[in-house]
Length: 229
Image (cartoon, rainbow, N blue to C red; front, side, top):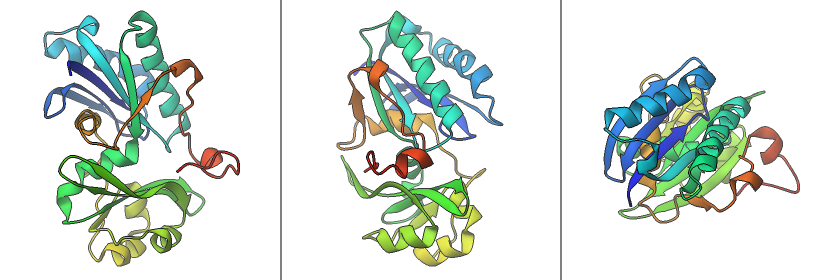
């Protein structure tokens, strides 16, 4: 695998990274929902810091939702623009919550539950376990209260992470038996998406970006005809 560009704009904490699995060469972060103005300059800067350009890329991996509608659209629109100029690139995607769980996997010996605030008392949530060369989806991305996700999960996580975990700290603590971890100490990182390319079951290859729609969040997850997971 050659040089990979990773983009995560699914939440308030945006980032880009350049490298290959096990060797991330550059990563830049931007916050406060400045994704539209900061994303492309950050990509150019990250590539430039490695002495490479867009023509050196072989893959792009973009964080999918559920997450911010605007953020996801910005991320995938940027990837679409790059692919139009460089159609030979391969495009992959993975849930941003999976990337966050991967970052947090060393915080406890066991599964990781990742929770994003979904408003109205709900969270977007998923539970993942990591093996040496693979990821197991214990609970696919879904929406509900923290307690409802706890009841639906077949495993007890070693740690619960994300802004949703901090928002509902007491329930998250009861679920895992330890304090939850979230921003600013732990946020999604594009570099995790690069490393996920090396794990079986972690990413999905997108054959046609023009026909692909990100998993935007509540409307998608609550759809009776397109339930996620």
